[in-house]
Length: 394
Image (cartoon, rainbow, N blue to C red; front, top):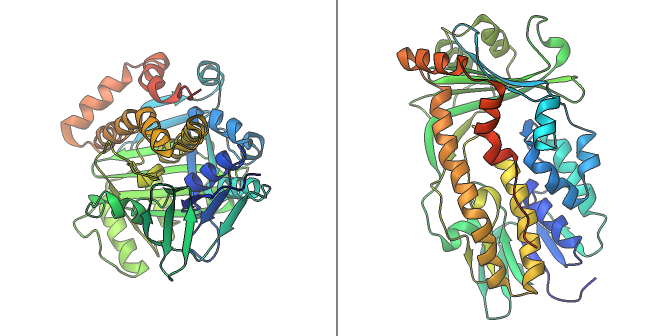
C-alpha cells in the first residue's frame, strides 16, 4: 500500500469500479466516489462480447462474472414484420474457438456487484457514496475535486467515469448535452413463468422493424426474461402515465409480428429512456484529469459494446498509469492514443448498424436478401475488428 495521494474516480458504475480495481490491484491508492446514496446498477440485462473477458482476467473477476452469465447459442436478428431470420451470429463452439471467449448475457446488477465485491477486498481502495462531483482545480502536482456539498478531496489524478451526462467532461470539454437520435426505450425484466410458451427464450434476439425494435434474452439461469422495446418518436421528452405509454407503444408496433406484441403486453412502462450519443472526440484529458467509458465516448447500443469499451478503457488506463510511473500527462496521452480510434469506430459504426436495424420499404427487402446470402464466416469477418479485442500496453 502506497502513501501517495489517491487517484480519484468520479462515478462508481461499471467503468469506474473496473478502473478502481485495476489500479488497486497494482498497489495504487484509490478514492472511488459516487453521487448516489447507495451503490448499485440499473437492474436490467447487458450483453458482453468475447473481447471483454481478457479484461475480466486482468481484473481477477472472470470466474465470478461467468458464474452469473447466460451463454446463448445464437444472437439473432429477426424481421419485425414477418418473423423471418435476417442474420445470425452463431455463438457456440465455432465462435468460442475463433475468439477464445464466449458471448454472454448477464444482469447488470450482478456484474456490478462482482466488481464492487472485488473492490472492497483492497484496503487501499476507499468508496464514498453521496459524493457528487461539482468541479475541480489542479496544480502542477495535484488535483482537487470539489463535491456538490463543498467537500474537497485531493488526489494525484481525477478520472471522470460519470457516464453519458458526465459533469467531469463538461468541466473541460465544454459541450452541449448529449444529442438524442429520435428514439426512446422501455426496459422490463419479467419472471420466466410469465413468458408465453411460444416465445424463444434461449437466444439473444433483436426484432428489427421500420422505426422500432425489440431485444429479448434470458437472465439468471433462465429464471428471468429481459425485454427492451425501442422506437422512434417526435415526443422524446414527453412524460405520461403507463396507460398512455402503452397506447403509444401498441400503436407504434401495430404492424409488428404477433410475438412482439405478446412481449409488449408484459412490459412495465412506468419509465422510458431517451437514446442519445455524442460525436467522437480526440482529447479526453486536461492535465491530471481524464475521462473513461461513456464519459469519453458514449455510443448507441447497436453492437452491445458500451460496457465492453469501458472495461477495455479501465484496463488500458490502469496499465498506462503504471507504465508512466506517475507521469499522468504521459499516461493519459498514451491512453488516448490506444483508445480513441477504436472507440470512435464503435460510435460511428453503431450509428450505421442502428439504421440497418430500422429499415423499411424496399430498403428492408434489399437488406434481407443480401443477408440471406451471408455465411457464418462472412458474419464473423464483419465482427473480427471488435471481438478479436485489443493488445494491452506493456
